Structure formats: structure tokens, C-alpha cells
Amino acid sequence: MTDVLLFHHALGPNEGLEVFADELRDAGHTVHTPDLFEGRTFGSIAEGVAYAKEVGWDEIMARGVRAAEALPNELVYAGFSLGVVPAQLLAQTRPGATGALFFYSCLPPEEFGEWPTALPVQIHGADADPFFMDEGDVDAARELVATADDAELFLYPGDQHYFADSSLPSYDAAATRLLMERVLGFLERVG
Image (tube, rainbow, N blue to C red; front, top):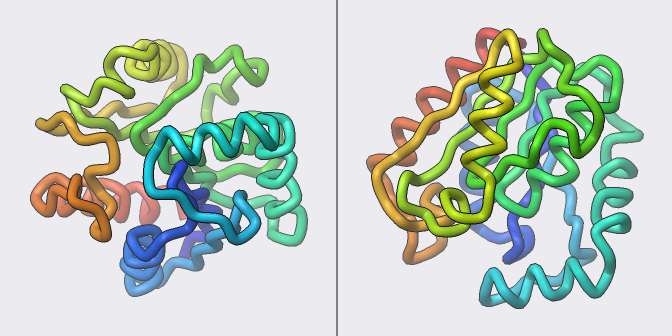
């Protein structure tokens, strides 16, 4: 099956991340969930982003790179929101990537150089999420889909940023079922 390196969002490594990772594991995939926040968790996106800014985005990315060092090169890099930053960096710059999964966020491909044209990627976001729709993420996702050979953007109805995190009030079970179906199909295809 497929090896996945899955980075958490701004609340830190919470129960919702583990539930999501366990569903991938139950399907036969190996999933690694490193802690970019060194044991810290936060009650809001603003608090988690403030911590990331305090530590520095370069350090957050470096922690992601260090998490990948002990793993095989043949990985699918995945991230939720803030976790997309190290996932996209690694997908674009570490040789051997087999795919990328970006949830709730996407950076312009040129942020880390050129997107490896043949590298498969899926981007998932809510169609009325103010973070995804109004802060440039959907535009970056559309740019990536237009330039990569194997890229898909999936929009789900709703305005919640963390809609696939079952531990939060923002959770949308129907959207998450569809997202998981698409993710499992992607992992089967690239694994």
C-alpha cells in the first residue's frame, strides 16, 4: 500500500487527525503523523497560527523536513491547512514523492519552485470557507490544477475550514465521507 506523511492543522495534533489517519491505516496504508508543534495544542486557528509565527515559518517547515528524513522518499505528502506548508514544500522539493494531498489550503506552486508536472495532487476545500476562498488558496489550487498533469480540485458545500476533523464542531460527516472516498481512491492509484 501507500506511505503517507500527514501534517496537522493549526490546532496541533488532535484526536480528529488520529481518527482520519486511522481510517487510512484501516484501508492498509502506512500513515505518519509528526508533531510540528512539539506537544502544544491550541483552541483556535488564531492561537495556532500565532504560535507558528512566533516559532517562525522556516522552523515549521524545517520540522516537517526533519520528520521526513527517517522515512522513505516514496511518500504521499499530505497536510491539513497549516500542515499544507511543509507537505507542499516536501512534495515539490524532495525527490521520490508519489503524490500530494492538500486539505483546506494550497500555496502558489512557485512558492517552492516549479511543481513536478507529473506528480499527482488532490486539493480539497469548502466552497464558502473564508480561509480557503478569500485568502488566495483556491486561486493557488486552480493555478496548480491548470499546470500539473494530474491534479484535481474538489470543493464541498459549506463554510467550515476544518470540516473533516471529527473532533470539532465544524465537522461535516457527509462531506468527509466523500473526501475520504476520493482520498482512498487516490492512494490506491498512486501507491
